[in-house]
Length: 152
Length: 152
Image 1 (cartoon, rainbow over the protein chains, first blue to last red):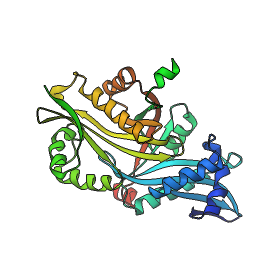
Image 2: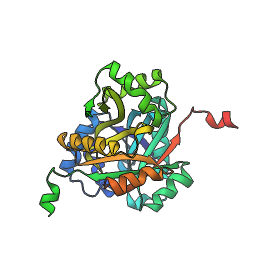
Image 3: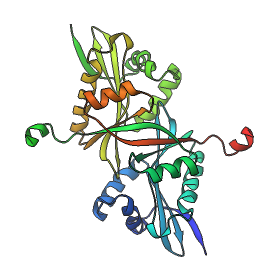
Image 4: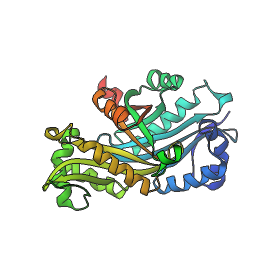
């Protein structure tokens, strides 16, 4: 059985990744996926995939940023293994690959967000992959300027 | 009393902001601040400040990003009011300004991270500014490739 990790750089590859990515990002259509990907790639977003016997079984999307508290770091936006192939270590292997790539990019740290309700994912990152729970993120919908009027 | 919010775009202004920013980011030196700022500005980071009678009393640093789960959003990296001027609503006013700016940039959402231990900040964002606690961030130090050997 041949399994390898590869970077996806061509539109045909991105389209092949979409069904797997969509298992995590279920609100996306192929059109909105390609549209956002275009903008994200111009900011430096990179998409990696695990391919086994020509079948794409996992994807990971990551970008390198710098800020004042993490310095130069990798931000893992997306990591998903297709449902039928979970619990085989494929996600762990892909994440280790991304960590190694990030180290080569000169990153001090790798960071990711996981929804407060996703306790299975939290166990994966903490217990298996040696990540530390570090901050909360807070978000606010900006809507339009007169949202309160519209809602009222 | 004149108090206004302005964007800082000149090196002399960034240097003036450093003592205030450093109250939040205490590990920075002026040199590392300017060095990282240079890299962050090339990614689109913007720095705003509240100035009162020629004195800089608060700063906010923000960047516009796109990803698959927040779509186009503002990420607030830094918000700090100088200690002697806290609890006067200056931070709330500056944050409202940044939110308004983000809306003008076409952002759907504004997001920020706050360390798990910073419960005063959490109350500010949730109770006063109407933010929702949404995810945990997890981080891992990447160190060098042979860190485990060095540690062992």
